[in-house]
Length: 249
Image (cartoon, one colour):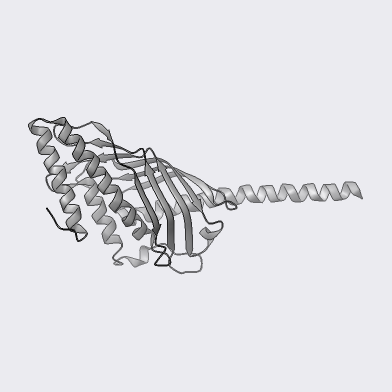
């Protein structure tokens, strides 16, 4: 009898382990598929997430190899690449229509900054994301299994140790560090916002950091071409401010 009980308990333990591993695998697949499906509708560019591993019990996980491409006119390369993104979500909230993300930590992201007078690849990408928040293509917004629009809440966002590679005249190929970015309670007051609105809030701050790093770096380069490139970056920054209601200097 004792052996039978031990056998049953062992079998249950094995089944639970298999179930956990299976759920973790499919949960990662769900996240990966969601990013690859809806990402392009938000940025209007190529978006690819290579892998995702998320624990359904702890809510913690890692997204690996996230690349966001440039839109036409800015070359075939990436606007930015995130090697690893660490996430900490409220357990099981991913299965509902209101996903609570306790923290997103992005370490050592890589950005490419190309500037043409009063525009840049990053600012154009930002415009695309802004358009996606207007609701003109609401049918493309991700929905939960219950059919309701998916809402996100991000309590803490951190981007650190970022690098910006310049692609402007006089400084092409040079790489410089960018200031860290930290946001708190994105979507909390609203009771959750759409993925596009989260992306917009994050990219506004990230763009400011990229432009700040690039402008400072270009000024240090010096020379006629470096000064001209720095002025182009500054004008691009003013365009971004005007885009979101700020006043140009």
